[in-house]
Figure 1: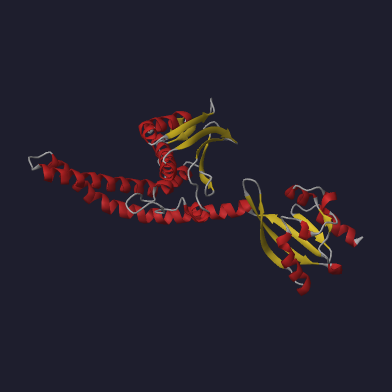
Figure 2: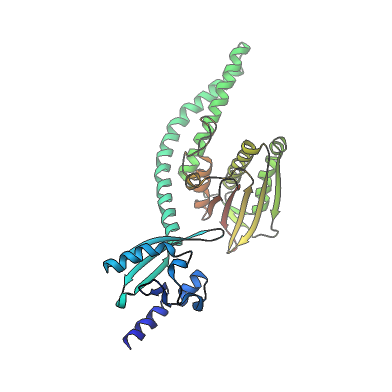
Length: 344
């Protein structure tokens, strides 16, 4: 009766459960396990754990738990899906008759929340520093730009005028970096209104028409009609879209001298989603993990500040949305932006 009660509890647990004998063959499972790992109970019971592709890494800690007769807690293993990786944590508990109980939890979403919280805290601290730096730099830059423009318009030799124009141009470039720093530091802007994401995206794509033609970049539009509005600051979201498009174009141009960018919009679970998929060289795992970090760039010195995507991350987060990247080397990259629908 006691064993039947325990079995009943295990079978009805919300966590995935397996009970194994001393030879690591399954003697009991539950519905949560079958649902999580998409297996039928009759195909699991009696099966050796070591023949289960997604669970064979548990064999070593199970043997350790049986030998020591002590619980092994928090053993992490991964389940590889077609387009994703799920993170699981297993508690391995020796029980009666040299049997072992496995209790497994999917902690993927929990890890994502923790990483997002850590990243948001890091952005906030960098933002405070960036605001101070930007204000200190902005004042002398404004003077350099104004004074150099006055001198350019005055009666001076042509060679000096050319040098002054270069000074003015580079000061303007530095001012753009400062502007991005301030946007990054502030994080949000109260001037928002209902906007159609398709129209906003089309405006940015139109701005890039000439450069795309010159650089042999083909744009494929796959817009879903009649999408709900999003409540956003249009200029900030345009900046995000432009940053994403520029990154994709540059990656394709440098790798192949040409490329195709697929721009898709759709409605997903109360959000409006716009995604950009390029056929460039792709992004390795280490770079992908840092792609939204402030000042992180793979470009040569002088060809990028590393602020574009971190600024974009700050803007989208401030709008209650989400931006993420998906890629692997040799298979292009996709940047996906989700913004809350104004109608929700």
